[in-house]
Length: 248
Ligand code: G3P
Ligand code: MG
Image (tube, rainbow, N blue to C red):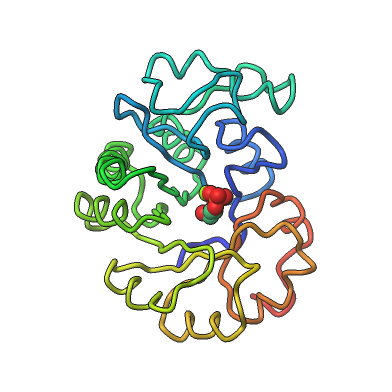
């Protein structure tokens, strides 16, 4: 199990522009020990940290990420949309995000996003290579994806990699799929999680993580169901309120 119940979502996206180095630092400053960030490939095969397939929502640029390369992506401002004090933030390269995370002593859940199967295979291989190069301790990295192909590709390249299966709502054959991938954890949308499913996941020996939980009160019963951790935009709410009732 990863050593964190509260995982900063996209860094800590209520405190700084999501998926930037500033958001990772903000998460660490808020007391978070693990962050979740999203990784995608640019057109030239460079891995970067970004949620959407296009750059409009979180930068001053336009178009799909696949139209950018390692040089051109640096020209986009990924902070000003969020607040003037973040002007100058860039879409981070995966490499620089990993170095910062390692240096801050954090753990990372890298969520790998790919628009096609071939991109998924390339992304899996690139990420595994970069994790190895960044000398991240394997116990402080968890790779997850909605796309099993990307997980197979990363596992092939880095057999020690910890893998998490990610679904919005768990499919009927969730256990079969998780076993086939050699996953250690199941990640799902808490809005669709039932008590029965939570117990089944725990009984099958998997860790259980829920996204995106921003309401600490509404989530209280879920801790009793055995949920191991949450992805939240608002780690400050959870960390300041202490550990959930009945949870060690
Ligand atoms: O990894 C959990 C969560 O981040 C999945 O959804 O859209 O926020 O990347 P999304
Ligand atoms: Mg994500």
